Image (cartoon, rainbow, N blue to C red; front, side, top):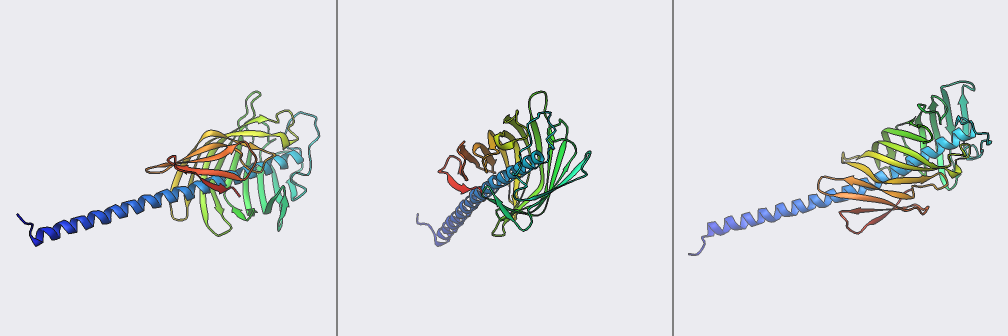
Length: 280
C-alpha cells in the first residue's frame, strides 16, 4: 500500500522536529562544555590570585615582626616595603589594622600591583586561633581587580602549622571587563620554612578544599582539589596539583603542573585533549 500524501507529510514533520531537537540538544551540550572551560579558567585564576594575597600577608607580617614566633632570626625586609607603604596601628597590642598601600602601582618580582589591601590581625599570625581578615580598596594585580573578603584562621596544632582560608564574595574583574564571583573554603599546611618564620622565601604550602565560581551570566561550577595544590613563596604561581570542576553532565580537570615554576596550567574535559591557560 502506498503511503498517502498526509502520512508522508506527518513523517517529514516528525523527522524535521527530531532533527531540530537533536541540533538544539547538541548545541546546548556544546555551550555547557564551553561554559565549563571558561569557568574552570576563572577558577584557576582566582586560586592563583588568592595565593598572591597569601604572599602579601606573609611578607607583610614578616617585615613588621608580626609572625609571633620566639625564633631569634632577624625579620627579612624588602619583600613588600620595597614596593608598597605599610602602615600598622596601633603600635602596641592587638588587634592591629595593617594597610598595604601600592599607590598608583609598582612592580615587584614581575607582578604589578596597585591600590590597597586592608588587614585586621587579631593576634600574631602564627598563634593558634588568630585571624587575619583581608579586604581590598581599588586593588589590582596585573590589571585584575580584586574585591571581597578573605578570612584566615590559624588552625595549628603542636608542630603542624596550618590555616583555614574562607573567601566570601570574591569578585574578580579581568582586564577586558569580564567578571566572576568565587567563594571557597581551603585548608593550608606549611611543609617547608618552619624553622625560619621571619624569612618567607623558603615557605611551601599544600592546599586542599572546595570552591564555587559563578560568571556574569549566572553559570555556576563547583570544584574540589583532588591533588593538593603546592604554592611556594618563591614562585609567583601555584606550580603543582589538580582541581576537579563538576558540571551537570561532564567534569573538567585543572592541572597546575609537576612543580615547575611557570605561569601555565591546563584544563581538560572528560579526558579530552587539554587546553593551556595563562594564570595571570
